[in-house]
View 1: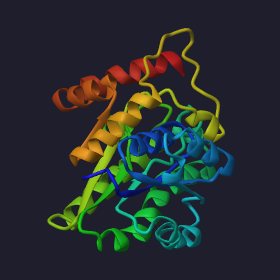
View 2: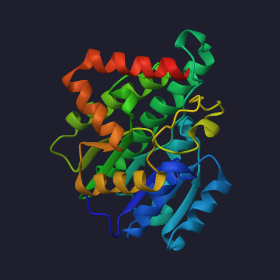
View 3: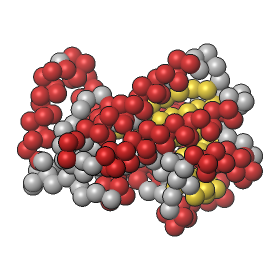
Length: 262
């Protein structure tokens, strides 16, 4: 997918990977419609870009169907068109067994991660389908490829995103819209704070993480190359290989590691 001169809508653009994807797209000559719930965070993202005039900001909650439905028109008015959608917005839940989560907590994770993604895709696909070439990229997770105890419902929501995205790929195969899914490993973002939950206590253990900047570069490179799966981080690449070769052994390995920190 060509980046230079094209317009990409990016959710979760106020911080973390969403911000870094926005910055990297602008570095590569694209224009961005940055979407987030936090207007101050959006303004800061625009300030950090090398060319703020190429960024328009749009305050929206991806779980609000009515607000999301109006975004394509707003962005076309601000930017002239929309060539790509990058769904980054997402949350986690408390690091506890799934049976300890309330139904409200479970539904909140599913509403943001899965239904928020669906809302955005359904709103933007009719517009993207009219472009000569377009791109749609959804944020799944390494947790969709292998489970992590303590984040079971989060993994389920991202597994749903994986299946939904791959289904869209099949439904739109041969058309104008390229479909990709992102599978990041451990990224040093503020997702815990933004999700309103406490971060996992690693109990003194060092946790290797990919920086948001490096993740943003990897994601944008994957979009540019039209990757079907965009794996981000050495841990994601390693575990993706291991779980294909030895799924039971790898799942038990992760279970032991999670038991040591929960």
